[in-house]
Amino acid sequence: MPFIRRDEMPRPVRKRTIYQKPDCTFFTAEEAGKKTVQLTLDELEALRLMDEVGLDQKECALRMHVGRSTFQNILNEARKKAAGALVHGWNIALYGGQVEVSDDAELGCCRFALRTLERIGGISQREEKTMKLAVTYDPKNGEIFQHFGRTEYFKIYDLADGKVQKAEVHSTQGQGHGALAGVLQQLGIDGVICGGIGGGAQEGLKKAGIAFYGGCSGQADQAVEDFLADKLQYQEDIQCDHHGEHHHGECHH
Image (cartoon, rainbow, N blue to C red; front, top):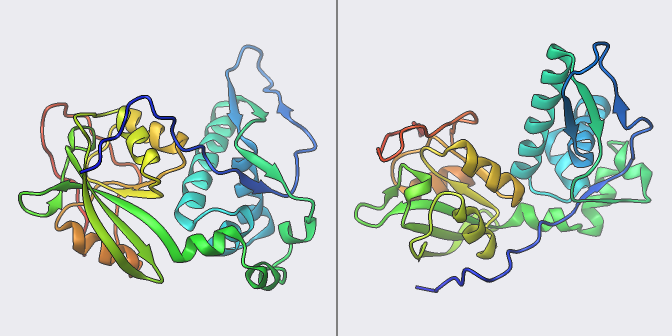
Protein backbone atom coordinates (compact mmCIF):
# COMPACT_ATOMS: atom_id res chain seq x y z
CA MET A 1 0.00 0.00 0.00
CA PRO A 2 1.35 3.44 -0.90
CA PHE A 3 2.83 5.64 1.77
CA ILE A 4 1.60 9.22 1.84
CA ARG A 5 4.21 11.70 3.04
CA ARG A 6 2.93 14.20 5.56
CA ASP A 7 5.00 17.00 4.05
CA GLU A 8 3.61 16.61 0.53
CA MET A 9 1.63 19.57 -0.70
CA PRO A 10 -2.10 18.91 -1.15
CA ARG A 11 -3.62 19.06 -4.58
CA PRO A 12 -4.92 22.61 -5.22
CA VAL A 13 -8.66 23.09 -5.47
CA ARG A 14 -9.72 23.48 -9.09
CA LYS A 15 -11.13 26.92 -9.78
CA ARG A 16 -14.86 27.22 -10.39
CA THR A 17 -16.03 29.24 -13.39
CA ILE A 18 -18.33 32.20 -12.81
CA TYR A 19 -19.87 34.48 -15.43
CA GLN A 20 -20.78 37.58 -13.46
CA LYS A 21 -19.34 39.55 -10.58
CA PRO A 22 -21.83 41.08 -8.13
CA ASP A 23 -22.87 44.71 -8.66
CA CYS A 24 -22.93 45.14 -4.89
CA THR A 25 -20.48 43.35 -2.62
CA PHE A 26 -21.86 44.22 0.82
CA PHE A 27 -25.39 44.28 2.23
CA THR A 28 -25.81 46.02 5.59
CA ALA A 29 -28.25 44.95 8.28
CA GLU A 30 -30.63 47.54 9.70
CA GLU A 31 -29.35 46.92 13.22
CA ALA A 32 -25.75 47.89 13.92
CA GLY A 33 -23.37 45.34 15.36
CA LYS A 34 -24.82 42.33 13.57
CA LYS A 35 -22.45 39.60 12.43
CA THR A 36 -21.28 39.40 8.83
CA VAL A 37 -21.57 36.22 6.79
CA GLN A 38 -19.32 35.72 3.77
CA LEU A 39 -20.87 34.40 0.58
CA THR A 40 -18.07 33.39 -1.80
CA LEU A 41 -18.36 34.22 -5.49
CA ASP A 42 -18.77 30.57 -6.51
CA GLU A 43 -21.58 30.21 -3.95
CA LEU A 44 -23.25 33.32 -5.35
CA GLU A 45 -22.89 31.96 -8.88
CA ALA A 46 -24.49 28.66 -7.86
CA LEU A 47 -27.45 30.57 -6.42
CA ARG A 48 -27.72 32.73 -9.53
CA LEU A 49 -27.62 29.88 -12.03
CA MET A 50 -30.02 27.61 -10.14
CA ASP A 51 -32.45 30.03 -8.50
CA GLU A 52 -32.40 33.12 -10.73
CA VAL A 53 -31.61 31.78 -14.20
CA GLY A 54 -33.52 28.54 -13.48
CA LEU A 55 -31.07 25.97 -14.85
CA ASP A 56 -31.08 22.37 -13.62
CA GLN A 57 -28.24 20.79 -11.67
CA LYS A 58 -26.49 19.30 -14.70
CA GLU A 59 -26.58 22.57 -16.61
CA CYS A 60 -25.26 24.52 -13.62
CA ALA A 61 -22.42 22.06 -13.02
CA LEU A 62 -21.39 22.16 -16.68
CA ARG A 63 -21.20 25.93 -16.66
CA MET A 64 -19.19 26.13 -13.45
CA HIS A 65 -16.82 23.33 -14.56
CA VAL A 66 -17.50 21.12 -11.54
CA GLY A 67 -19.13 17.76 -11.02
CA ARG A 68 -22.80 17.57 -10.05
CA SER A 69 -22.13 16.54 -6.46
CA THR A 70 -19.63 19.38 -6.00
CA PHE A 71 -22.12 21.87 -7.41
CA GLN A 72 -24.81 20.63 -5.02
CA ASN A 73 -22.47 21.07 -2.04
CA ILE A 74 -21.68 24.64 -3.16
CA LEU A 75 -25.39 25.41 -3.58
CA ASN A 76 -26.35 23.90 -0.21
CA GLU A 77 -23.75 26.01 1.58
CA ALA A 78 -24.87 29.17 -0.26
CA ARG A 79 -28.53 28.62 0.60
CA LYS A 80 -27.69 27.94 4.25
CA LYS A 81 -25.74 31.19 4.53
CA ALA A 82 -28.37 33.24 2.70
CA ALA A 83 -31.18 31.81 4.81
CA GLY A 84 -29.32 32.56 8.03
CA ALA A 85 -28.67 36.15 6.98
CA LEU A 86 -32.31 36.73 6.02
CA VAL A 87 -33.73 35.14 9.16
CA HIS A 88 -31.33 36.76 11.63
CA GLY A 89 -30.68 40.06 9.88
CA TRP A 90 -26.95 39.55 9.35
CA ASN A 91 -24.69 41.55 7.06
CA ILE A 92 -23.72 39.78 3.82
CA ALA A 93 -20.28 40.20 2.24
CA LEU A 94 -19.73 38.87 -1.28
CA TYR A 95 -16.08 38.05 -2.02
CA GLY A 96 -13.50 35.29 -2.22
CA GLY A 97 -13.66 31.71 -3.41
CA GLN A 98 -11.54 29.73 -5.86
CA VAL A 99 -13.00 31.22 -9.04
CA GLU A 100 -12.13 32.37 -12.52
CA VAL A 101 -14.35 34.75 -14.47
CA SER A 102 -15.41 33.68 -17.96
CA ASP A 103 -15.72 36.30 -20.66
CA ASP A 104 -18.52 34.32 -22.34
CA ALA A 105 -21.57 35.83 -20.65
CA GLU A 106 -23.96 33.90 -22.93
CA LEU A 107 -23.03 30.57 -21.37
CA GLY A 108 -23.88 31.96 -17.97
CA CYS A 109 -27.43 32.96 -18.72
CA CYS A 110 -29.16 30.88 -21.38
CA ARG A 111 -30.45 27.30 -21.54
CA PHE A 112 -29.85 26.93 -25.28
CA ALA A 113 -26.14 27.49 -24.76
CA LEU A 114 -25.86 24.10 -22.99
CA ARG A 115 -25.58 22.40 -26.40
CA THR A 116 -22.61 24.61 -27.24
CA LEU A 117 -20.86 23.76 -23.98
CA GLU A 118 -21.38 20.02 -24.46
CA ARG A 119 -20.12 20.22 -28.04
CA ILE A 120 -16.83 21.85 -27.10
CA GLY A 121 -16.24 19.18 -24.42
CA GLY A 122 -15.49 21.27 -21.34
CA ILE A 123 -13.68 20.05 -18.23
CA SER A 124 -16.87 19.33 -16.35
CA GLN A 125 -18.24 17.11 -19.10
CA ARG A 126 -15.20 14.90 -18.56
CA GLU A 127 -15.88 14.93 -14.83
CA GLU A 128 -19.36 13.55 -15.49
CA LYS A 129 -17.69 10.48 -17.03
CA THR A 130 -14.59 10.02 -14.84
CA MET A 131 -14.33 10.23 -11.08
CA LYS A 132 -12.32 8.92 -8.14
CA LEU A 133 -14.59 7.88 -5.30
CA ALA A 134 -13.41 6.82 -1.83
CA VAL A 135 -15.31 4.77 0.74
CA THR A 136 -14.38 4.45 4.42
CA TYR A 137 -13.60 0.76 4.49
CA ASP A 138 -13.54 -2.18 6.88
CA PRO A 139 -11.43 -4.90 5.21
CA LYS A 140 -12.71 -7.55 7.63
CA ASN A 141 -16.19 -7.58 6.13
CA GLY A 142 -16.07 -5.30 3.09
CA GLU A 143 -18.48 -2.83 4.67
CA ILE A 144 -18.48 0.94 5.01
CA PHE A 145 -16.58 1.83 8.17
CA GLN A 146 -18.90 3.85 10.38
CA HIS A 147 -16.59 6.53 11.84
CA PHE A 148 -14.93 8.70 9.19
CA GLY A 149 -12.30 10.14 11.55
CA ARG A 150 -11.19 6.71 12.77
CA THR A 151 -11.11 4.78 9.51
CA GLU A 152 -7.82 3.00 8.87
CA TYR A 153 -8.56 2.30 5.23
CA PHE A 154 -10.24 3.82 2.21
CA LYS A 155 -11.32 1.76 -0.74
CA ILE A 156 -10.68 3.86 -3.83
CA TYR A 157 -12.77 3.37 -6.96
CA ASP A 158 -11.85 4.73 -10.38
CA LEU A 159 -15.14 5.36 -12.17
CA ALA A 160 -15.53 5.96 -15.89
CA ASP A 161 -18.50 5.81 -18.26
CA GLY A 162 -20.82 4.65 -15.49
CA LYS A 163 -18.68 1.69 -14.42
CA VAL A 164 -15.98 0.80 -11.90
CA GLN A 165 -12.71 0.60 -13.83
CA LYS A 166 -10.43 -0.17 -10.88
CA ALA A 167 -10.70 -0.55 -7.10
CA GLU A 168 -7.93 -0.76 -4.52
CA VAL A 169 -7.56 -0.35 -0.77
CA HIS A 170 -5.35 2.41 0.66
CA SER A 171 -4.16 2.70 4.24
CA THR A 172 -4.48 6.04 6.02
CA GLN A 173 -1.05 5.37 7.58
CA GLY A 174 -2.39 6.15 11.03
CA GLN A 175 -3.72 9.58 10.13
CA GLY A 176 -7.20 10.49 11.28
CA HIS A 177 -9.90 13.13 11.70
CA GLY A 178 -8.81 16.48 10.23
CA ALA A 179 -5.78 15.03 8.42
CA LEU A 180 -7.93 12.68 6.33
CA ALA A 181 -9.17 15.46 4.04
CA GLY A 182 -5.54 16.05 3.06
CA VAL A 183 -5.00 12.31 2.51
CA LEU A 184 -7.98 12.17 0.16
CA GLN A 185 -6.95 15.36 -1.61
CA GLN A 186 -3.47 13.94 -2.20
CA LEU A 187 -5.05 10.83 -3.73
CA GLY A 188 -7.06 13.00 -6.12
CA ILE A 189 -10.43 11.99 -4.67
CA ASP A 190 -13.58 13.73 -5.94
CA GLY A 191 -16.08 12.30 -3.44
CA VAL A 192 -16.27 10.06 -0.37
CA ILE A 193 -19.00 7.73 0.93
CA CYS A 194 -18.99 7.20 4.69
CA GLY A 195 -21.05 6.57 7.81
CA GLY A 196 -20.86 9.17 10.57
CA ILE A 197 -18.73 12.25 9.95
CA GLY A 198 -18.12 15.19 12.29
CA GLY A 199 -18.47 18.86 11.50
CA GLY A 200 -14.72 19.50 11.44
CA ALA A 201 -14.13 16.74 8.91
CA GLN A 202 -17.00 18.03 6.79
CA GLU A 203 -15.45 21.50 6.69
CA GLY A 204 -12.09 20.01 5.75
CA LEU A 205 -13.62 18.11 2.84
CA LYS A 206 -15.49 21.20 1.65
CA LYS A 207 -12.31 23.27 1.66
CA ALA A 208 -10.56 20.52 -0.30
CA GLY A 209 -13.36 20.50 -2.87
CA ILE A 210 -14.35 16.91 -2.04
CA ALA A 211 -18.03 15.95 -1.99
CA PHE A 212 -19.20 13.66 0.84
CA TYR A 213 -22.13 11.30 1.21
CA GLY A 214 -22.63 10.50 4.90
CA GLY A 215 -24.97 8.26 6.83
CA CYS A 216 -24.36 5.19 4.68
CA SER A 217 -23.86 1.59 5.79
CA GLY A 218 -23.61 -1.87 4.25
CA GLN A 219 -21.26 -3.24 1.62
CA ALA A 220 -18.89 -0.70 0.09
CA ASP A 221 -19.12 -2.20 -3.41
CA GLN A 222 -22.91 -2.08 -3.36
CA ALA A 223 -22.90 1.56 -2.23
CA VAL A 224 -20.71 2.46 -5.21
CA GLU A 225 -23.02 0.58 -7.57
CA ASP A 226 -25.94 2.52 -6.12
CA PHE A 227 -23.98 5.75 -6.57
CA LEU A 228 -23.41 4.95 -10.23
CA ALA A 229 -27.10 4.15 -10.67
CA ASP A 230 -28.03 7.44 -8.97
CA LYS A 231 -29.79 5.45 -6.22
CA LEU A 232 -27.50 6.13 -3.27
CA GLN A 233 -29.46 7.58 -0.36
CA TYR A 234 -27.42 9.57 2.12
CA GLN A 235 -27.92 12.14 4.87
CA GLU A 236 -26.86 15.69 4.03
CA ASP A 237 -27.00 16.75 7.70
CA ILE A 238 -25.16 13.72 9.11
CA GLN A 239 -23.08 14.28 12.24
CA CYS A 240 -20.69 12.12 14.22
CA ASP A 241 -20.79 13.23 17.83
CA HIS A 242 -19.95 9.99 19.65
CA HIS A 243 -16.19 10.03 19.90
CA GLY A 244 -14.77 6.57 20.39
CA GLU A 245 -18.00 4.81 19.47
CA HIS A 246 -18.96 3.08 16.25
CA HIS A 247 -22.50 4.01 15.34
CA HIS A 248 -24.55 3.44 12.26
CA GLY A 249 -26.17 5.83 9.85
CA GLU A 250 -28.57 4.60 7.24
CA CYS A 251 -28.06 4.05 3.54
CA HIS A 252 -31.10 2.29 2.18
CA HIS A 253 -30.81 0.51 -1.13
